[in-house]
Length: 147
Ligand code: FES
Image (tube, rainbow, N blue to C red; front, side, top):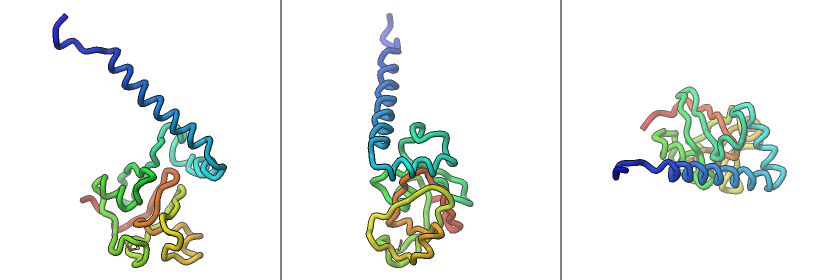
């Protein structure tokens, strides 16, 4: 046996650990309130199953790029980490520079009163600087560009 032999057992354990984490995450989502389960069902058109993607995926159109949007990051922050520049200015939900439309999926806000009218909310508009993906999303952001 040489020092360069790999340990296939160690590799299997890593895969098992990742699988366990995803299962646990899916279980937590299922055990949450009914609203979460409903949100996942709403996003089912965008992905095969929520368990296959524990971190919501956001596709930016017409750019055609997708990034992961963990719940601790706003859409604006998650996009920046992925090398995608979304329009922005104040970053606190007041200037509306980051206004964009959710084509599919569900987002929530990190502040109670984002600068949106009731009609804009009903039409799916969000402010990406204070919005968090609750499900996989498709965002319409014509001004988006790669960093
Ligand atoms: S950057 Fe100003 S509202 Fe989002």
